[in-house]
Image (cartoon, rainbow, N blue to C red; front, side, top):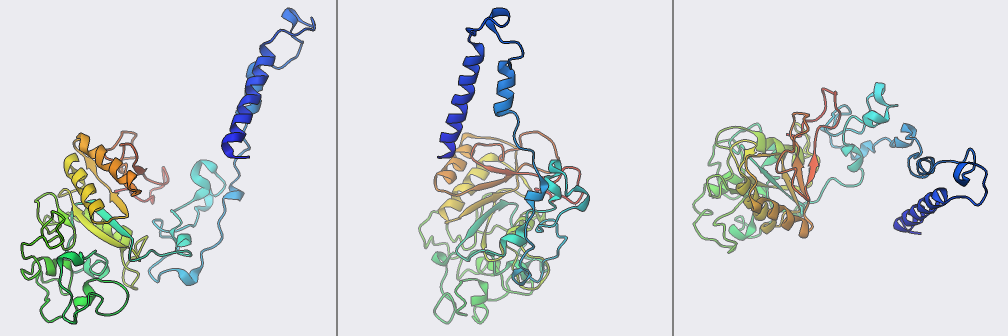
Amino acid sequence: MSGESRRLVALLCVVGALLAACTPSDRPDGPGGARPGAPTSRQLVTRAADSPAPSDCSSARYEDPDRSKLPLEFRDLDYELTSSRIPERAGSTHHLCGQRGPGVDLAWGLERGRDDVLIAVLDSGILWRRASEMPDLATQAYLNAGELRPPSGGVFDQDGNGRFDMADYSDDPSVTDRNGNGLLDPEDLILDPAFSDGVDDDSNGYVDDISGWDFLWGDNNPLDNVGYGHGTGEARDSTTAANGIGAVGTCPGCRFLPVRVADSFTAEGGRFAAGVLFGLDSGADVIQEALGAISNPPQAQQAVTAAVRRGVPVVASMADEASKHPNLPAAMNHTIPEHVGHPGDRRARRSQ
């Protein structure tokens, strides 16, 4: 019997019980024919619907993660990733049985992500020129082969590792460190007139969209030129490489598409909508945003709805204030809003 069938049967039983309780009895055992001590309709409803089995934290335990599948950068008490529990809350269902983090370490036992999974990060852009950020992100950024020529060897996957990224240009003498951060990254291609040639090679309406787009200035370089850093942090949270250096993202095998919609995490709703549509047109599998919108034009909801109709989730921040206000765009229909995990836990992960 399906869940809906079971719920229908239960509802019919409750309705039948209510009707029976409200019908005068043929036995004149009490006032109005009611039997002394007979349960009231409210008591019947309470018995049928208001007394679920009590929650038990012992049934909410996980197996330990497979440590052979954990990235070298992972630490057991990293609350952004761990499945460990806060001991003093482990028996409290009001505190999710002490769950400290989202349990990404358990998910890694199944999958660390795939190269064909693209996460569009709508935010303040990327700190291409900050040397401390690029070792973890340079090869994680999406490259649009439709706007690029292959490396000097003639094939896009020059190193033969099954993916096309900046590492494939490492032996191409014509590609140099144009932004001076000490390594090759997508902005080196964006700044090179041989690649940013003013021709919309893939005919998608975005000229030279080599690695994302900037909807604040309307150009092909999603550079965080004010040094705010929020968009870079969001990209790191999602896709930081598992390379033994620094931190690791929740999906280190995935790629990110930088989409700049503001110079901070406060964005105009129309630019948010444009960023969502660009992500969809670029083949994004997930739209990630940790924004607070200052406007809510109709196209913002329409863009989110378009994403859902394509099967693309829009993961949206409800902000960090632990308040109950409806933060936009997260409060729109069809988003997946997320917030701080543990009220009162100072180590709880921020949503922005």
